Image (cartoon, rainbow, N blue to C red; front, side, top):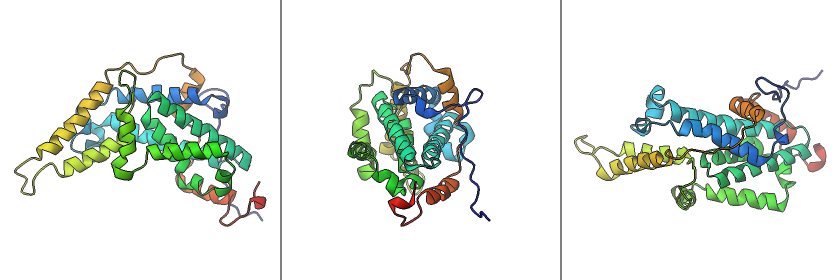
Length: 266
């Protein structure tokens, strides 16, 4: 008797439309479409959404920040789903490389938010533990991953990312990775008042409004333009077939059991 749990694989169908294989689309087309979709959330964020930790304490009052957070998590899970559900190692390697190129293209476009979302998927535990899959990537792919991870390193409060963002020509459309700023704003908000609640920390107050001002400047751009592939756009808006992370980790362990050798997997 087969006692292995059945795990439903992701659907390749768009909503609606014929079956869609994301591997058929060039990484630049995927990245640009993701950026255009994300811009629709970013450009409408209101200043008050960033203040007083509204995105967590009163999420209904921060709809566009919440939309960016929720979509970030969905994209990360989508990347993991596509890699882990591939039964054969050579397909997993191919998909890993394809999505790494998507991350590169997102970075080149100045879409740091989706860049980090895709990179998070590639580093998620269910993928990271696939030692044989990662080992079969080319040295160039491994070097690229290391370089991209270095940009988003948490060391020194994301100093590499902050420098990279600051070096960008802001005459071009840019979507920052708002996770860093939300972290900053949480820290600023918690230290905004003195212990007796009678005075404000002016430096932290100025820091909060500095972030809001920066966002407003970025929102003055028109975003990315160009011809839209409706089939790809429709698919990336819905991202069907995503599995829960616990299921993905379970499936990852089936693909490459702990301490297995290369000749024990397909």
